[in-house]
Image 1 (cartoon, helix red, strand yellow):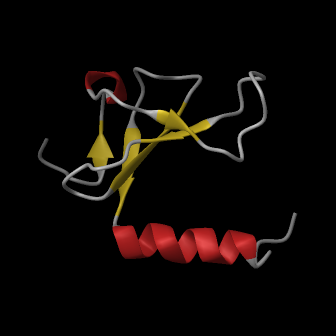
Image 2 (image 1 turned 30 degrees about the vertical axis):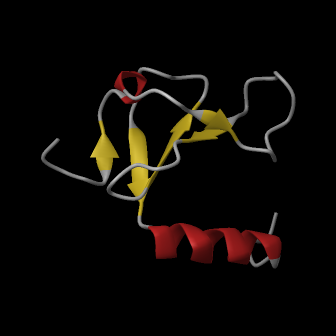
Length: 74
């Protein structure tokens, strides 16, 4: 993997977990992989062979805090 921020085929990694905020089995699920050496990989559960984006720990923490504080309008 030359670019540590993208994993082209996320299915090669094992141990994905569905986000606790994902709703049921309706297909709109975010999956994360804990204990990756370069950060937190995140993928779309509808596309397990698709790419995963690897967030640095501090970037992911900042994003989660912003979501919890409703900083993103919907």
